[in-house]
Length: 267
Image (cartoon, rainbow, N blue to C red; front, side):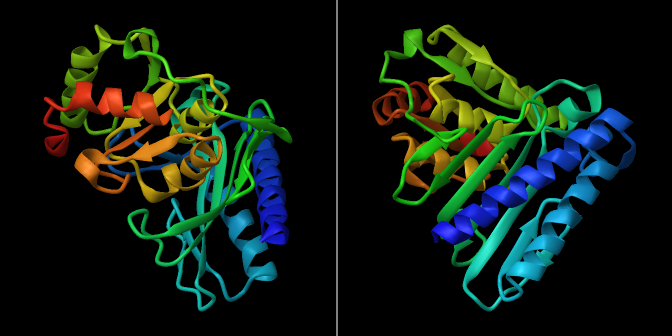
């Protein structure tokens, strides 16, 4: 597994370098997806193709699940889960918070059942690298990291994100309105992968979101867990598209209690 983890790190660093180079050259919007504001750039597609080609050459029996449409059923029991540019809107506006996120998981490519083995998140704009290998801790640029110590919700800095559908964003805003008077403040960075990495590094006390896709959370969730954090779903369900909360385990319990009156399942 250590060799596969080193492969993952190399893939993410090469992909991040390509994303950064393409950003400097200018961004071309290739298409919209779920709505007019949910964009995909040509760089998203090119970065995913680079990673897929490298994996197919090195690990032809592995499965691949990519945000930009790659879906390969492998025979090895392992699947690479790729978000080529997480934070595409940041990328489009040249806000330096967009990341390559690559995870290697065992089992079906479903966050509810898979067993994540390796995760790498690279902020392509800054070059910062967050990574974790199952059972060996989490690191930032090679240095061990841990989640922040537990704090009361009133002094917790909490990250979140919003979907692309306007009605869903309004419902998500109602959750923020419910929570913001009970925590230190709310941050919206624009990249789920970097939000999760920030929890792992102690830059955020917690992060929650409704509507994440498998590639949004695969690497970051493992990095949080290996940094000593908890990654929880709603009402005991596994973390996934329905709901994800990442924090120190004690703070996670407190925040779930604060959120309990909210109709999370309807968001």
